[in-house]
Length: 129
Length: 291
Length: 141
Image (cartoon, rainbow over all chains, first blue to last red):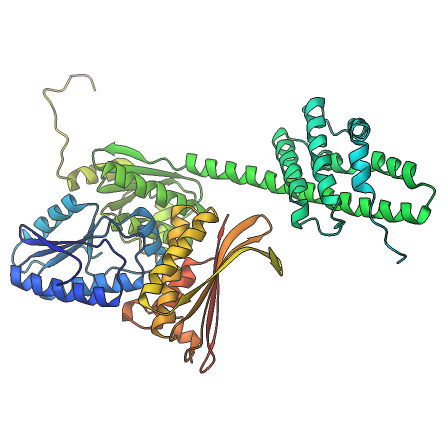
């Protein structure tokens, strides 16, 4: 069982990243999420990073990986709660979160997921992150 | 060099404090340290008194060469405060440095009085005193410069912040009218202001108006693109408005790709924003006859 | 206080960078010094992120090393300087290593070029068998 709790909200999964991630934890999270998406038939994955003071390329890679795996399982990934200083730094760093949509908070994130999966089956017109 | 004697400066400072203070203040007034009346004599006397005490402590250690050494910390602190107040009052660096240099006259007079009969020793002590006061005087000027720079920098910052207001046009719609050139320092402020407002107002659309930006070249475009990217990470989409015909041409000629919808006027952008949010403006009833 | 060229070093601290846990420690220590040097939240974040990148490189590719954090002053401005050093295998092709590698996902390029973009000053010395030293600095204007 991973140290990071994964909650189910409707047909979405919600993960709140509170602690400083290191390799092992990141791997466990990715594994756990993939398993849960399949087990719960989740259509959306919401990652709450409001507790993160920094997002470096390691975390960025992890988020991109999660998004890629979700997409293969036909689930949408939304990252919420990014802090302004982190957003500014990420842009300067040049890290692009591919396949990750972003929203201000959990509420808006859920609305975004609903809108994304509310479209037709096979509709692929999404904004890239 | 001949045999070094222990310095008598600390003793002189201690024994003749009142007289020295009086003569020094008089010397300062004569050389214009009071400026044009911005400084009161009481304040001058207080500054002088504090420096003399600090000097006494430092001089007792016989280290006259390195004014950065800890023994001179207290003296430097007094000088920093004096510089700061003088800088704020708008005095010149020269007027400020006079504070220190004018101590030479009364101090040398004292030394001559005490050991005038021993020219070698007198020369040695005058050398020590000159070395110390020159360095402290220069330190005062440096501190003065730094304070002026700090004031200017603070004013620049305020100016930057004043010229980048973020306006709430409607629920969920922000407008950011940019005036002036967009350099990297400005862009940082713009990004911070915009993102903070996105958080506070939970806005989903930000209209960046560049009517007031004189030129858009590759660098400016990069700054805009970064700002748009940062807003998007916070869940807000951007529309750029205020694209003048010449700007549109420049953008195409330079092969720039802004990556967002751009409109000629803020009105157009606002209309688009409302549509995007699923809102519409409707007529409330029969219009009046007058146009 | 020590002087090095025009730099005045106000404070220095050395940290071992050997494991993932140390990367966390590096972030906390750098954040603390940045706050001490008077950095605003954005500058703090940029510096800590740059430090995190290089720290991870030091652990993952350098076989572990050390970080020297210094608060420095040059004339009117104050800043934080970070020096990461390791005795690892070194980097054979620095130019390629410093090229943007974000889209290829993985490898040294990500950390180095990103950290450079987030810093005001950046320099790297490395050769095969000679280890790697990365020095970066950020100034508060």
